[in-house]
Image (cartoon, rainbow, N blue to C red; front, side, top):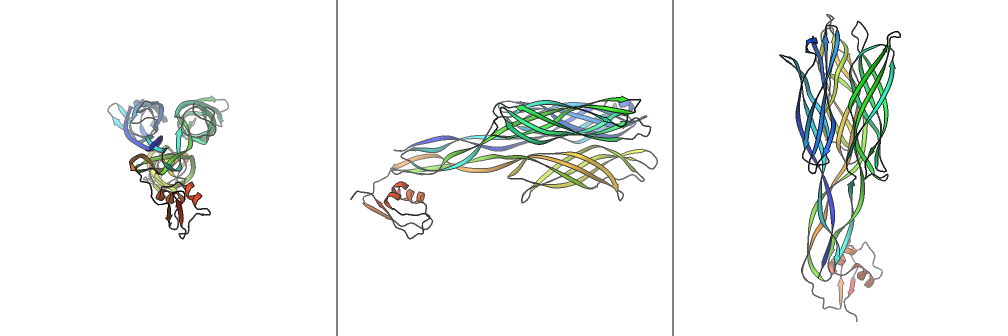
Amino acid sequence: MIKPEYGKVFGSEQTFYEVKLSSESSVPGKEDVKKPISLSATAFIVGVENKETTTTAKIKVAYCFIYLAEDGFKKADFTNELTAEIPFAGASVKVCCEDARAVSSQDGYVAKCAVKVSAVGMKKTETDALSGGENLLVRERTEEFDSSSGITYDTFVITDEFDVGYGIKEVLCYGATACLKSITSGVSCIIFEGEVILLLKTLPFSDNNDILKEKRCIPFRFELENAGSLPDMRAKGDCEPVRVSFKVFTDEAKGKSTVNAEVTLAFSGESVETTAVTVADDVYSVTSDIETTRCEIPITLFAGQGSVTENISGAASGEVPEGGKIVTSFGERITVLGTTKNKNGVTVNGIVRADVVFKNADNGTSSVSCEMPYSFDITAEGEISCLKVALGDFDASLKDGSVFFNCTVKAVYKSIIVKKITVIDSVNETGIRKNENSAISVYVPQSGDTLWHISKQLRVSGDEILRCNEGLEFPLKGDERIVIYRQKI
């Protein structure tokens, strides 16, 4: 009689969820608006709550409305809050705004946009897999499985102070991009190192309505608490700005300003350990006739986290006003439309958009929404997952009567290896094997037969075959004769 023994095997498969939420908010300062110039919207994850079967993401949408007033360019900053319910636990969530626009109403203007919420998680499975047992001979193989320390979250504030050689009247708008240079697993923590790139559009004290650009790179290092992390594990995670504020101090006598920037970063991360697990690949019994069933288990392995920086440029759509000259641009944003697999990874396709401001031939000001398609390749092991792109530097110019964009794109992604393995999930006895009456059995193998294949055919252990056939060498040629002595003579 056989007595199979089973162990637990845990599979994992990526699962996805996507939903679009509507955000709407009244624009303050309606009495000052002479002409709308640009409305940009940025969505941030400001809180994540993991429940037993769901993930709740709290989202803040930050609007920046640039407009012309009687005395020049002005801005209005305001926010709106949303909540997204993800139908599985432990989700990695990213958000982005689409189709931001200012709509005229009886009370002034209303800011609207769609917030695209994308979530990735792991659906885990548990299966009984044969590991051995009494009166069973098992051929084993080794498979790799990932185990996670669990996702943790926290925020960290970095500050920077810098001088500019002119007096700043107002910081009109900004772009903030967090660029991770490394992420490592430590003792009960995950260590993030990187920098925040700030791109500011400032309005100086001037009668010409000039708009100037300032760029700052602020380095950071943060240790995110994670109880299950150890130095020999691999780490993955995300970092993004969720709040940026500026204070400007101007020395009127020198005509110079000092800017104090404060950036709140939100971190999420986990450590991953890949372990080797032994499972039964095949089985037979010397004493019994058996039947087996097998099942497939999906496995997702974390291959690594990477980033690329690409310079992209090209002509952008948008009608240039006759005699117009570019003053500046607002609301620069990048959208990923999709990815396609190539030989070494994926090709990322999307659109860069911006509101380009012109000084017209009649000395008036106009704003034109322009967009440029782009594509670039990412080379990585396995499949690309959790792709996030952000704009670094951005410049708009005129070339041959058309708007031309030149910008830097920073992409962060995770690489995964997806596979399916087969395990034996049940072994049943169908009868007792009859003993052979012959004293000697002779087996003629085929070329390429393995010791396991022959053992299973003869229902004899591999050790017994080698004992009875000294000098047997594998791989077999096919002209051997294998002898089994079943009775002592």
